[in-house]
Image 1 (cartoon, rainbow, N blue to C red):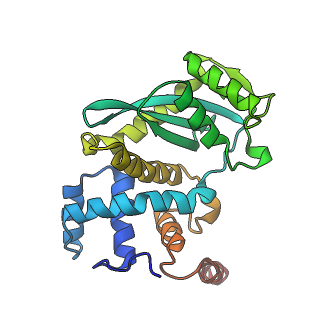
Image 2: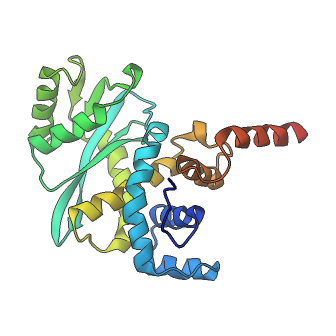
Length: 252
């Protein structure tokens, strides 16, 4: 069954709108005008529904492509997101090069939330991708969460927990780039819609930083576009694209 059954637009148009919204930090109304200029008249409320539906799917289907830490030294921190007029906490982890490892949105900031986030970040990684060092701020919740995860066998016992402030500059700088994408939203209505949208922002940030480069045949935004389309079965398969790329290189 097609992922776009019942939509009034082709799959590539839907994914185009979702990718632009999550990549460039534009408002829904601005994106409505941008698409109209290109001959696609779609209401901003429809684009909103597309983002809510397809952003989590993009993150889920492409997670195995972009989530490969280049370093065993992690930087973990949380930033604030306004949801329905109240602050929520977006836990984030990057490696020492700034590559995104994982993220988790929580309404609370305590040991339980920190444990849930770190457990999510550690899950599904290859043995050589597991951290040796996790650097956090001075919040006691991280130390308690790591101790519990080690006790449960979900985190290696030899993982070091550091609390060196300057080492987290890389994740704090990355917070700022993400906030630029979130700014046009002007606050989320619910935790569900916030998390769905942030999943799209995070995966597009990761791709823009060059994560998943092994699957980006052209190493440019067009390659990113094709990565997303392939995840939904839109356009030619990766084998056909690879053969076309090789023929082009040989002919050059």
